[in-house]
Amino acid sequence: MERHFALAVLGPAPGCLSYEPIRKPRVSETNTSLWTSMRAGDAGTNGLIEALVRERGVPAQIAVILVAVAVATLVRLAFGALTLAPAGVPFAFYFPALMIVTVMAGWQAGIASILLSILVAWFLFMPPIMTWQMPDKPQGLSIAIFAIAAAFQTVLAEGFRRALRRVNASETRYRRLVDATAGIVWHTDGDGRVLAPQPGWTERTGMAWPHYGGHGWIEAVHPEDVDKLWPDPKRLGAQGYHEAEFRLRDVRSGDWRWHGSRAVPIVDARGAVREWMTTMSDIHEPRLAGERRELILGETRHRLKNLVTIIESLAQSSRRRGDAAVDAFLKKFLGRLHALSAASDLTVAGNYAGMEAGDVIRAALMPFMEDESGRFRIDGPKLLLSEQTGGSLALGVHELATNAIKYGALSVPQGEVAVTWRIDETDEGERVVIEWKERRGPMPAKPEREGFGLRVIKFIPSREKAGDTRIEFPPDGLYCRISFLRRQIAAADAGADQPRG
Image (tube, rainbow, N blue to C red; front, side):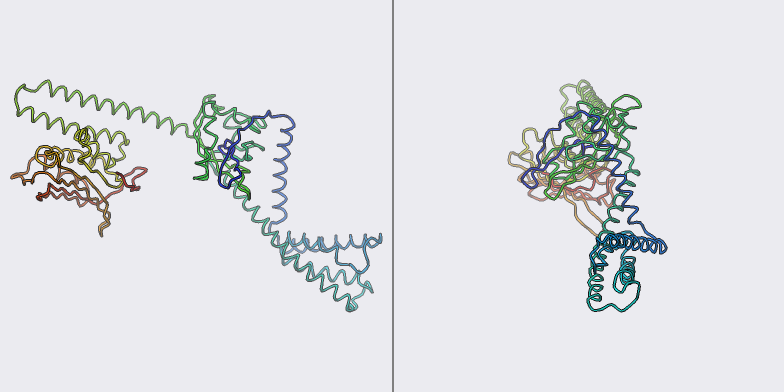
């Protein structure tokens, strides 16, 4: 339907689209008769082409040859009786017959009709008539010229026959495609006018033909959505089609239902849009389901944040005042709670389909980056993680950042942290490598025993195949490498690896 909506006209500069506003003419009785006649004419033309070029058996081919040559002979005899046919030109009347035979029965029948025409003209029109006397030199030359010209015409006629068959096959495929399409397939002119009845429109909207002819179909579109149907010149020029979502009046319920359409322009040799082909389908239920899902997800995120706030408030109000150990524990606990909350929020926002690694890392580091974002470098391709691994990564990154503030690079003004990730091709498959590298900070010291924070970091790749965590303590700063084999996450953009800064 967009194609009709889309009134695209190419301007004087090639590839530069310009649009003229559609005038909504009144559908008059004269237009109704014109459209009805055009529709009937299209059907008649298609039927004639199919009748002309359909496959015929040998008996039918012989019948076509005999009838065509007989009619041409009778016409020649009639013209001769009226002294309208010039003497010595017996073959001119057979050229139309040869063309018709070749188009209807093929080039083999055309060659046969040439031979039959020569024999008939030789017997009936070459003196002495009604005999098989050997033709003299001028007559033989006339026969040879006719044979050559007729053969050339047969070649042209065969090409025309094949072109007609291709057109007919294309038309048949188009009609079968329309019949097989669950939605509506529309055809309009370049200005978005409907010039013939469109299958499915009356059943969908209740508008009878010719009421929706011309621009009358706009009456079925919600007034707020009409502007969506006019194509954007830049987008149309870039992608070659126009898409829109809009509401149509439903004849069964009387309510508005959402529909989606894609319109493709058909241009002429100069690049001007002459026609639009559009497919339109009902997307009402999926769209409403998506809106309901967004409401539920929004409510879930809101309640999750409220729950975290309540837990934080209870922890703060329940702590023993003036106890440094309790304060340190509470600070660590709330930091981990906020990291887990950020990861959970990303999970809900992604409709539980997965979590993007860059978003997880940025969310976990956000409390540490408020005043010192220049000390962090975060870089890597787009990478979708499972919900479990994303949550573990958020907790692990929070532990690394907390350690950096207390003992590492973030404990001194000049310290810096780089968090990068990449995807390496290996014999086992694609291996994800996430690296945390501190520099320009104090010399790190290896802990004497493994604490809870270290276990959290090592737990990050535990749910992935061939997961591995390596933590090193070189003089220039702590280094942590987390790797695992990549698995595909069921999401629309799971496979798209785009650089992210």
